[in-house]
Image (tube, rainbow, N blue to C red):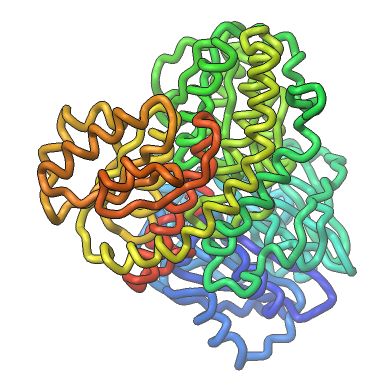
Length: 610
Ligand code: G6P
């Protein structure tokens, strides 16, 4: 949450910073601001509003300064006002700082600094960093002051700082919140996430936890918390700058929904051995004895990744006959979980930077559990903390509402479950071969499901004024219902609740009436009939039903008000394609209601606060 961008190079900084900021806007978009150094003169512009508004204001200024920092905010402390927008300055307006994350001990630091005569202008936690650096720089120098200030902060944060006395230097530090650095064409760039760096370089240096760095045109120096130099090779990121563009689609979300057949194919490519009838997961050390010997698996995640984990847990139990459960990372970390060498933890995360997921992984490691990451972002913190990583290869996902990250997580978890079933001997060879074929067919089924775009848009027009929605699914498709409901509420702000079909009679049915629509998943398979019974019960109470059914299922078609027909696929892989019309429906409802699906209110793509 919050996007940070910093540039030190040969060109005027402002346009480069603003372009980078636009690529980070998915992280937060309450307010925006930038600070540029021209010699020892610090120039600052900020406002409560979008990056485009800031760009419009700065365009006329033609600042020549070649070093600066810029910020897009997702408010945590203090309302959305210009005063609280970043950058924040010290008393003498020579230091500018921008932050992502939360400084937990800001109150005590502020009281101490105010007692020492510092004057604060905002309600933010960030401002303490500017004043701390102001207090420390005379004795420690700017780099030392940055390190010492970082050491005195509690919480999860990353910050960028410039100081008028060091006009060719950019200072950065991080603890738990993400920060990436690139060096290219005589410039050094720091940002919260890779997309801002892509127009400049694909060689990315990840700043480690507790480290700080000094950047200057064309160079960087990394240091640990004690000020010792750190050597780190860049990671090559296989994404292109074009992935950060909409490519003709009205929104990133729609583009990413349509990218799913390709993305899932990428997840699977080289990982299915069709002739041997089993997965080929060489990069995944399931042979890692600690992982394959586990007697129990906990899948840990937040948000959409938790829905994928629900599916992964069900499939692991079904195919590998190992007890498995999906746990919300924020619940696990504050609970009293039973962890240890016998319990393998599978941490599922698109970004690899979600604060609660990282904290849960730390807890698991401390307890001796082996940790396997299922992650999309190469080199992210999670992949560095885990014992092994299976990359989902979704490519860059910009839309705040996750779509292709989800289906690729489903595919990756299915691969793990099949592989684990083969290794544990619980999945007979014929079934394993059928599973591999079923997975190989998934991208084609996803492509067919995309044809439901038109029907989903029609339904969106019809139901755009509903106040509530119920989503129902069972077994493999209970997570599908949960994910469909999440998509709708995230981007259209319509309340949507998901329930496993069997639980409907234990409460939700009381809400059913003609203005309360239900979306039900009743594709071919073991729970189809049970789902159709649920649908009858709803319709008997005059509740409208949109049903997802397998193409050609006439009984299902007759059972509902509207039917969205999906291709015939093996039941256990049906969630990969069944979620597609639900994503499309949510997207079109949002557009019908004039909501911005790429920038839903109050949300951020990467939740780096706890
Ligand atoms: C936020 C995003 C969700 C995402 C969740 C977990 O809430 O808006 O789309 O599913 O964080 O993120 P992760 O990067 O760990 O998958």
